[in-house]
Amino acid sequence: MRRIAISVAASTMTLSLAGCGVLNATGDGASASPTKGNDVTVGLLLPEKANTRYDKFDYPIIRDKVAELTKKQGKVEYANADASAARQSEQMQNMIDGKADVILLDAVDAHSIAGEVQKAKDAGIPVIAYDRLAEGPIDAYISFDNELVGEVQGRTLLEALGPNVDTSDKIVMVNGSPTDPNAKQFKEGALSELNGKVDIADSFDAIDWKPENAEAGMAKAIAKIGKSNIAGVYSANDGMAGGVIKALKAAGVTTLPPITGQDAELDAVQRVVGGEQYMSVYKSYPDEAEAAAQMAVTKIQGKDIQFDALTQDRVDSPTAKDIPSKLVQVTALTKHSIKDTVVADGIYSVGDICTAKYKAACAAIGLK
Image (cartoon, rainbow, N blue to C red; front, side, top):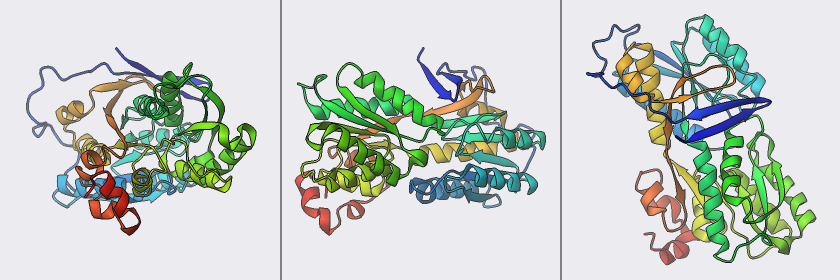
């Protein structure tokens, strides 16, 4: 049994991937007594705009899936907190006051939102933690296997450093926001691969996942270590990788070291094609977002068999135990796997990626 530890402040969450299957369940749940028809209102609270995935992928995919599942009678009320925990608290209170049927919550601050989760519970509104595990009495959780994300990043960075990598090779770790419980999981997964194999010469957290904070922190790391002494950079996501690259170029680095990322943003995929960023982690947002929409609709419609089938993992948070959950797997994206990931899944077309600036680089790797 694999276990993943998540830490928020002084609390510890443990994730057990033990399946809690519906062994004798039959049917699709349609015969269950629904608590709501197709006229459902799904509240969707997303955390920030620095990462383009939320507005570009998550929201429209969830909106369209809810419409499909409810014969276009259901709707999604969407709010983005733009990295403000206080704003998200207000947004969630508005959804509670507006009597949303169910809320999908991607928390800015997993701990501080717990009070609003309790208010939703008191109002009879189920809350499903989306992408980040919030505290409070949430009803379900869906995310990617976050520790695996870090492991894939760390392992791919080591591969990029070559077979002779050792503890004389200095790397910088640019970790995500400390208010995001996923950031600690990414870091722990990466460290499980990197510890004892390289010298982690500097490590820092980028507040709110902002690229400018990653850029500023990287500039300090360069000054501390020396621009010619950095063999590689672990960046927890693509936006911050962009900030890291800016800092390295500003310091006069012409041959960039291998740099990791996550989210397969279009700019990052193009940087991978062009050789500025070594890898990203492709997470199938359609898989996650569509499953979240299904969980939300089946939960409020009382289709218990469908809901149980969608949530066969279990999670413990600091405030709740055995939360029904679903974990989605991830894939390393390098220049050799672009065609089999983001192109194959229809996230981007070859034309999106291979603009005039990247046509020659695309041709060199057979992306056409």
